[in-house]
Image 1 (cartoon, rainbow, N blue to C red):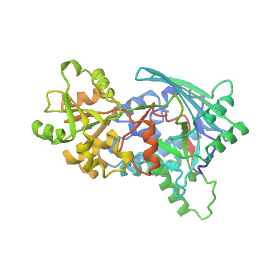
Image 2 (cartoon, rainbow, N blue to C red; image 1 turned 180 degrees about the horizontal axis):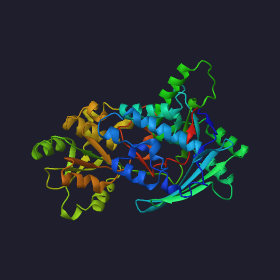
Image 3 (cartoon, rainbow, N blue to C red; image 1 turned 135 degrees about the horizontal axis):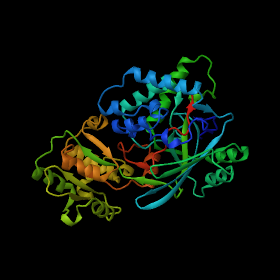
Image 4 (tube, one colour; image 1 turned 180 degrees about the vertical axis):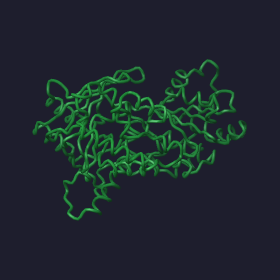
Length: 436
């Protein structure tokens, strides 16, 4: 049974910070070097100074200890100077986000609370493989700051959206914070009504919790819990490191939007064009995209027309045009049948097993260490990378379906890295959960 608890969140002081768009940031794992510089320039109090960004992993190096120490020093200074303040009473925090994606307006709703960490009860279902470097980095930051600086994104089944409705009715007239950044309007309400909180907790008590985003942060929280419990003589169930700050949203919410994550191969020795096409033709039907369909929107539209078929757009530096590849499932059965059914039907699994691993000989260790693979949600950027020579191959994919996420997680399996992108990413800097 998942256990969800209220907490007294730490947040920016509205008397000092009157525009949250200047101090919030995306989760650290999407913050590259240029974005880190942009966020740092927005405000001396931007949360990037705490979460640091992922430039160290991109460069293939470990972050110096001095950066973790500086983040902790900054965090404690902001607390002392009341830039960050603690809520006086525990609460659940109801979050509403309005945005546009793929030409459609959405309003995603969910709430932020604490999720009890219990790896043995198996009520939390991850669905993606993780990599060691990000976990080591986040664990060191947690040790220094003693806080969850951003929430993990979880989903639960609630076909009637009971929890959404009860928290909506418990909102105050005005949110505790609201701001718009990059076309996304966010509003957060503090929910302290005991009956509403009890209803939400009870309704989720017999449901599975699926991790949508933040797998590395969740596994980091488990590692930190293990460390703290081993070093603590007097253990209690309510000690804060036994929980991880989490965002919870219903799978049936109409506001959920999942975008594809496209793949690129960089610093990769591309096989000769004829040889590569010959190997691809063994497992896929191939349609060469003519000049009328090479514009990005047309390529993506062509891909979406394939619907339930496993298909993707494949570009290589030595091809004259992009290719539409559609799986010959019978031909691929000898390889894909080794996978559980919930994984074998995924486009990302087909790509990784057949193309990257079998044809291009990219090993599982190569994938885990991101030796060649790069990821982006921007199809135009993936195509441009091949044209400019910064990548040798790019693959455009369709979105993974929420039902596929659920089935993989239920089977206890893990999707390849970066299989899902729930848009928008949760903003870091709305709330912090202190662990001391």
